[in-house]
Image (tube, rainbow, N blue to C red; front, side, top):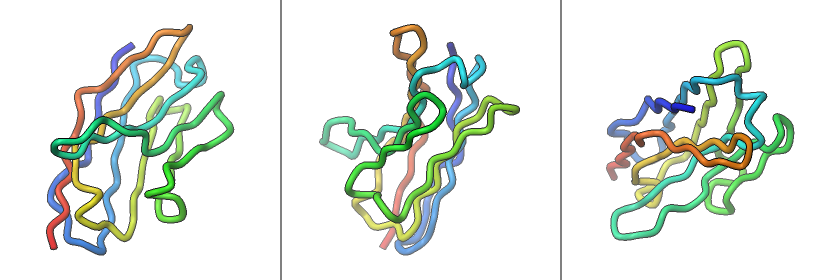
Length: 114
């Protein structure tokens, strides 16, 4: 399973970022698809995930201002985060679990400028 993330860049505080993750397999075959991020000097943390194609979980830090979605026709997982702050700066990684194995994309950098 390969994951290719895109959509990062430099964004002004208060703005939004839309990320895409192209998955090389049918995302319905994955028990979990989602996004993590790693801020400078910090551990990687969960941002949002879709479990079994249905339930969605969000980190408290992005709850209410982010949306994760999946397009099974395109095998792509999307993440939109609104009302960005400097705390949202980091490398965003897409993640998938298939048959108990975990897969990671290469990461895309999001930098929020004040």
